Length: 184
Length: 148
Image 1 (cartoon, rainbow over the protein chains, first blue to last red):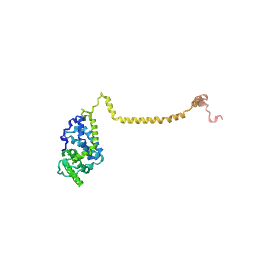
Image 2 (cartoon, rainbow over the protein chains, first blue to last red):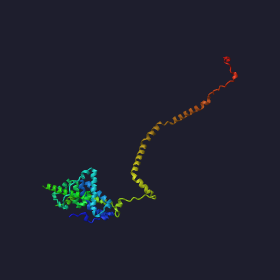
Image 3 (cartoon, rainbow over the protein chains, first blue to last red):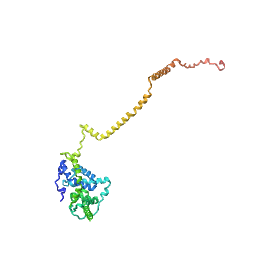
Image 4 (cartoon, helix red, strand yellow):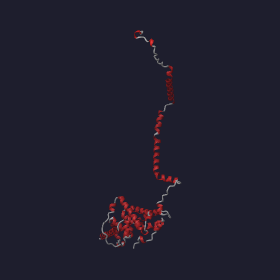
């Protein structure tokens, strides 16, 4: 079972007072999931490292705007998401990146571990993940790396709950199909 | 068998050293026991009349690069003027400068001309034109008696 941010005891109150050790703990906890998420959106290693750094700096600067301390994780991811959108805008890819699938929400199982990947499938999995539309990839990675509730994913990506449900459903379905095809 | 999370994290383990460096860099920028938001955005202190030096510094500080640039431009202009302009002028002046003998001769010639101008009217005064004095009417002769 994954450890989710909301059940952890994170030193967010101490971080609010500017305690460096508290920030170090928080950043250490989220640096890799953030890097994974940002990389899956921008597909550029150096750019993803830059965005992670900008996210940390912005978090320190705007910690006062965090209302619920238990939502620190999703708040941090929402900053990173905004940074990715800014990068798309800068590169003129906003239209393509923000092109969404307008499908009806489908039924899906809320368990990131339901999709298990064999060792020989790992390369295919990452390749197929990169082939998904960015909107689907975004919700799928948030679901995989942090197991955020759908409401949190909706807040991070700035979407409505129904849209997030449908994206996640179709993304997982597409990934499963692609993996099955790859194995045949 | 791995979960997608494990697969994704596994791909980015190489970046962990860089992420550590980023984290340390950001955390190093924090000062302990100081509210972060207060440190990042210091409160604007109104300028007081008792702090003219600080106010003056605040006024000039944002313009320091502009002023430095202007200063450099002026220095360049001055350097160009010093290097090129005066040298030919001096050379021309030096080339055209008369010798002391020539100067003395010119001075003497000048004095002579002045003397001529001053002394010439005194030596030969021009005769004053005589006013015609009208003769009395009795001395006026008729046309016929005018002596030839």
